[in-house]
Amino acid sequence: MPDPVWVVGAGGLLGRGLVSELRSRGHEVLTSSIPWHDPAAAKTALAAGATELLLQANGQSWLIAWCAGAGVTGTSQTDLDSELDVFKAALDSITDVLCRPGSARGRLFLASSAGGVYAGAPNPPYSEVSIPQPLAPYGFAKLAAERAATEFASSSGTRVMVGRVANLYGPGQNLAKPQGLISVFAKAHLTGQPVSVYVSLDTLRDYIFIDDAAALIADCLNRLSEPDVSDGETITKILATQRADTIGALIGACRTVFKRRPRIVLGASPHAKAQAHDLRLKSVVWTELDNRPFTPLPVGINATVRDMQSLRGADGAL
Image (tube, rainbow, N blue to C red; front, top):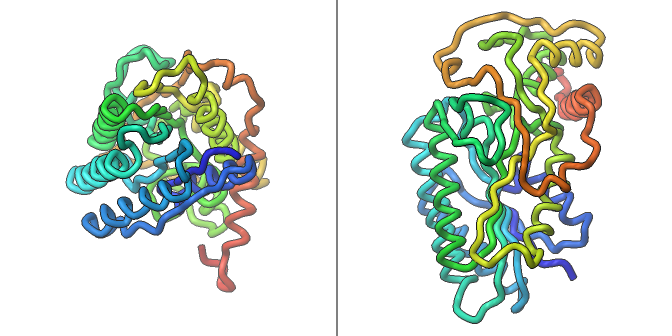
């Protein structure tokens, strides 16, 4: 039987997609309801989740996929510090509960942000050997979480994979979070509202559909168990289509799906300076896993719109 998996952050876009993908592969998937608004209660709930995974594993190896995190580019330093503190406390609980001497070894996946950590780096396209250079507190917080995961791997003997995810999109994105341009365009299309764009239309981003990202992560978790990976080792991999599109091209793809051009208002934002102009990505780690078809942008946009249509209330509101 495949190893049991605890997906932390299963209520978010990436977490939900990964739960579905792992279950389709025969994994027993555990999820937890975490009161993220209350850090102390969140730490308690995460410790309980680690204990539940221990019972489910029943002496065999285990998997944890950390897909949690409400932070975005404009999130305050205080909130980011709180998120990082909860993550580090969870790693301590995992160490105490699951990583005792003589116990079965596990694997952990940490979702990080390619856009956050490479926003200020020179010379795109960026690969895993590029030196990260964030522009905003969000990116620095992601790097701090990566360091914490690396230290956890070394001290506990757990194999860790850090996935630097490109611009994720698809059905189920949290429309309350100020991110996800494709979801913003889709919502505007359905509501008739204009969209404010704060960066130039030749800005380059790598957009990866949720189903593709989940399948790639699941394959990476399998790859993490191979004998050429050592216990206590951390592997960092960029998770992307490795094809960049301009916002202008994205608008064109939306026009194909919507049958009309999105209503765009060019504006200004204090967060724009933390947005890189060119975020092309090129993975050089486990490249055999990248040899797969990716969902074409219009197909993914159409799926996102259809999902939003299914969520509309009787008054047409989202």
